[in-house]
Amino acid sequence: MSASEGAFTGPGILLVLDGWGHADASDDNALALARTPVLDGLVASRTSTLAEASGDAVGLLPGTVGNSEIGHMVIGAGRPLPYDSLLVQQAIDNGTLRAHPQLGVLLDKLAVSSGTLHLIGLCSDGQIHANVEHLSELLAAAAAHQVQRVLIHAITDGRDVADHTGKTYLSRLTELTAWAEIGQIATVIGRGYAMDKAGNLDLTEEAVTLVADGRGAPVDSIHDAVTAGERGDEWVPAAVFTTVGSAGVADGDAVLWFNFRSDRIQQFADRLSEHLLDTGRSVDMVSLAQYDTRAAIPALVQRADASGGLADELATVGLRTVRIAEAEKFEHVTYYINGRDAAARGGEEHVRITGDGKPDYVARPRMNLDRVTAAVVEAAARPEVDLVVANLANIDVVGHTGNLAATVTACEATDAAVGQILEAAGDSHRWVLAVGDHGNAERMTKPAPDGTVRPYGGHTTNPVPLVIVPPGTDRSTPALRETATLADVAPTVLRLLGHKPGSAMTGRPLL
Ligand SMILES: O=C(O)[C@H](O)COP(=O)(O)O
Ligand SMILES: [Mn+2]
Ligand SMILES: [Mn+2]
Image 1 (cartoon, rainbow, N blue to C red):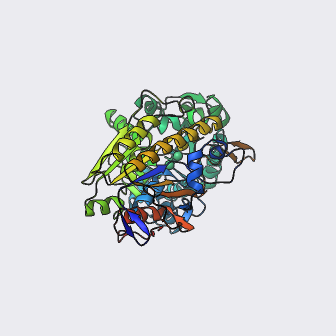
Image 2 (cartoon, helix red, strand yellow):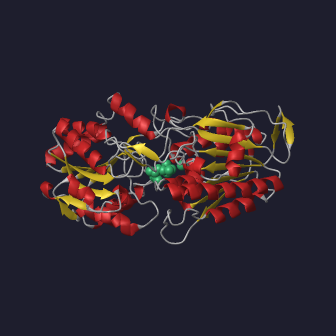
Image 3 (spheres, rainbow, N blue to C red):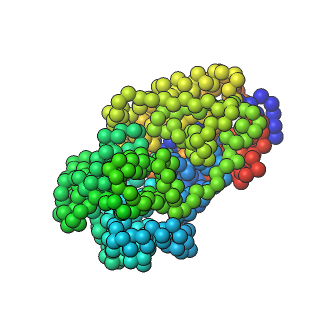
């Protein structure tokens, strides 16, 4: 360790506590209700501040809740990055989406062949994976090109928005189709099936055969579609509207995927592509934003450049990092934090902690935290490792269940884990920077579109705690700046490691 402008430099630990947001205590604030002496101590310390993690501070539309993808990307990039949802909205506002040549060719082809356009995506306004309002532009484009038939394959949410609101969003779809004078809902299925990202292909298959072959329970109304299941909107079972005639995808049809975030739709997109190919159907596919699929699906809106972030800077100066998270958040500390770049840089080691079987987060709110913590402690003890980067998933993942009691347990388990990690940091004379990537557990209810207050497991627009714990007994560290955003994390980490912020970073070191 050496002194540098009042701050110390040396090896450290960057700890992302997923879903660790800040809000005043209330009876729906799981973090405040939980007994969390370690986290409370960190937040009350002099080297603690609050960082903006939502809206335009990170590259989202103003007022939009943060999410893991943009959160980790900005933590890594050291600058706000125009996120896909923002870029899609800009393309709608400036007319480039509607005038997109590739979209025009696809729609004209359908108009000539009388083929069907299938719109597939998450129907809510959660703005994390999709926004149902984007459909007005897509339907208008189809109508302008005189496409004759548009079918919507709606995925119900209940995770990024309050549960049991699926009916409201499906009703919104019918308003949009009435306004555009084209389109009808053909099928409905919950995101638990259609947006599995853990390789549970049996779940994905339900969505694939529903959309491709029209195989699902016949329903006559939105009400029947969403009330068939008793497990909420995430698990609405496959349903086909009897009113649409043939709901499946025919040879010569086209598919437009309207989720803008890839991670939870790519498995479905790949499986549907393979299924159509296997069954001899030639179908044009495009996606609203870029997907990380095996299948080549052209995107209508391109991703922002996220290079020049922490990973690139660490590689340039030759520092070693270990990245640790359980499966749910593994891409977050590797792919996302590295600027949506799958290549591991030199000096980068990845530790992915996997669990057994299908997770039940209410029954097991500790998840695999003990093993994640053990891996962090082990990595911290290795002198050749300059920076340990870890994500503790529980506060967010259990928070998503909307179950307050389970989330309180998740917060308490995380608190104990952070305590162990701080001890290990003390032993190895490392600093620790702990930060949330967006809010979640600090608010567990939300008014639904119908005005009722419902349990809510989704993210928030609240700022997140950002705390630096100096190594050893160093108590000379100055207080942190009061205004901060996630873009300040990478410059601060580089400073603490004894290096300058990267030239592409606009965030500023917090000390
Ligand atoms: O995909 C999910 O689990 C949620 O919709 C968003 O959560 P994340 O942004 O924390 O992954
Ligand atoms: Mn997150
Ligand atoms: Mn989340």
